[in-house]
Amino acid sequence: MRRLIRSLLPTPLGVRLFPVHGREIARASAPRPPIRLAHLTDLHFCAGALPRYPASHDVLRRTVAALNAQDLDAVVVTGDLFDFPDRLHEDGPALAALMRDLRHPWYVAVGNHDVEGRRVAARRRYLAETLGDHGLARAEESFYHVPLGHGVHLVVLDTTDNGEADYLTWRGHVSARQLAWLDATLGRLAGEMVIVGLHHPPVAPYPLMDALKFHEPDKRRLARVLAKHAHEPVMLCGHFHMAGCLPFGKAGVLAGPGLIEHPHQYRVFEIRPEQGLITFHLEEVPSAEGECEACVRGPARFRSRLLRNLSHARSGHLRVADAR
Image (cartoon, rainbow, N blue to C red; front, side):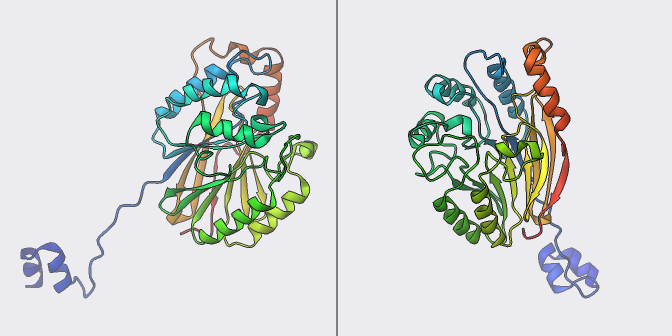
């Protein structure tokens, strides 16, 4: 009799009045699709041809086309967009013109090649004005926070921020005001999944690379801020031009391959916050025969092969404990 009445009543009402076996049927909900990010780093773009990086313009053009063919929620570019900071007025508009074709939201972290020199604040302002609102133009500072949806947040740090007017080194820095902002931001995002984008990894993949790493006092201060919070953030970095995965306290540091190096690669991330799971893999930028001929000759070939052999963690997954 109950089955007959349930079949005649509207489904939600029938289930509430006459639950099967004494229990209400839970309506199955479809799992949310993962948030998909592409991580690019170290474009070293130049509108002209460079012996060291001979094909940066063509590489970026083909990368934008490859990204447009994918279903992505955002693209994160972690610094060294340019090769020569003194050429920003020539190279900035050319890069912006190529990136205007990208159909996905994209966000920028500043790298040492982007702003190195005197009057860093003026260089940052020019980048924000030239590239448009991709994080840098959202606030007065070049570090910022963007909600990506479903409890996932992008927090971008500026590792050229040494608290001074000039930035005359290639090392990573974070000023006291930036660390105070990061501390407050992580406090507001307790229980959420946090992706941190920054150019310099706070840990070097090999001892011989220590000269390129974070300024040691700033690294220790950054570690203390992260240790205060229950988050286990994932850091997306660049700078070393090789793929790698290293721990930094509770954080997992994922250094991306330099897009400018051959074969031209970037990472794609699938983020499932309800499972606390992040999976990643490398994608190679497609090229027609002969398009990358300049990249596989001479010094460019030797450097790219060396970096490729030093790379690791080309694909894998990370578990993030304190995310919803």
